[in-house]
Image (cartoon, rainbow, N blue to C red; front, side):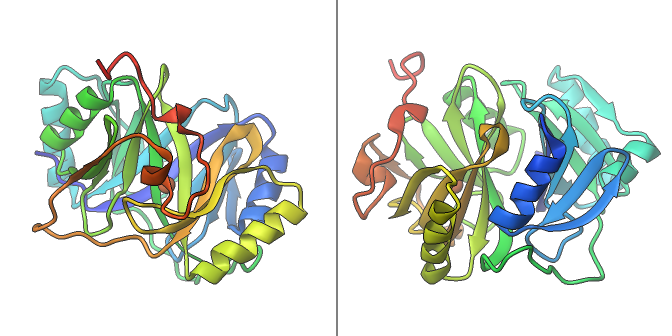
Length: 288
Ligand SMILES: [Fe+2]
């Protein structure tokens, strides 16, 4: 069992780096904390960075998770290799570009690129937002998987991820007290489906709803309230059609929590009655 102890970063290729960075600062409210070797590091909390953007293929996505130390990294490398996965250990220069002391990279059974990092950097400066969106924390992602049941099995058997709830075949999974750190979305290709930042309160969600609409940002869903996690949410499109989410009030779960099965319908997605795009959840291949 590989024990994840932290949820750290995304690395995202983008077709137009400057346009994307401007959107991240001016619309999402992220802080640009560094530019090095074609990478722009941004964040919405006090950690070193949350999203690293680079000029490149917009489907090139990596999720960075944290392990406790180098012994755990060695063990993870052995475990993943024994499971038949190709594992690559990053060079010192590659680790420096990920702002950590060491890491390995592998692809999950869907082909998602995952970094397992050790001692990712903290920051001496507090987060200073590009705009006051009320962001508290980089909190979870939607992960596109080619087979949700196989993906859930992989992440719960190889790793310490556990399922908090299901909607259809999609599991919302976590390794800590937050209801979900990723939600599995059925897809014909891997990648990061959306990126969530927690904001302080419902007022922040609603302020951004009007702010983004005023700035002609395309809203994907919401404002609404997730029936599974209880969070108030707003989803919107950024450059490269990446979906970003603000939410607040996500449910905390402990060992006594028992996962619930929700059907795929509007009420499972939003308790307030907003109309989501449920096509992202339906997967006829695995729903037989
Ligand atoms: Fe989400």
